Amino acid sequence: MKRFTPWIVALAMVTLAGCSGMSQQEQQALSGGAIGAAGAAIIGAMAGSPAVGAAIGGAAGVATGALWDDIKKRVDE
Image (cartoon, rainbow, N blue to C red):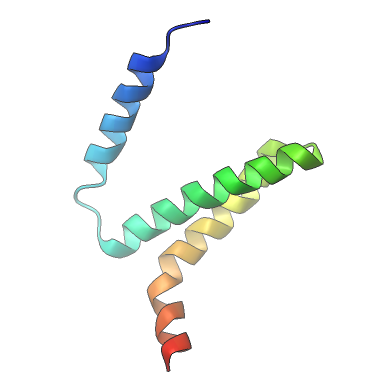
């Protein structure tokens, strides 16, 4: 088994440091994209195409995350 843990830790630190200057909407878009891509990749793997699932889920997650505050305001009205 290859040792890749230091690379994962370094990547996570750089990624988290890059999020510090983001607005709430940008953070929600990033989170939505990551969650959407991960979830859809798992579903896509079951269906036979994880890359397509991740791409579609990521795009849907970014859009939902970016628009989340607007969606929430409309539901609360």
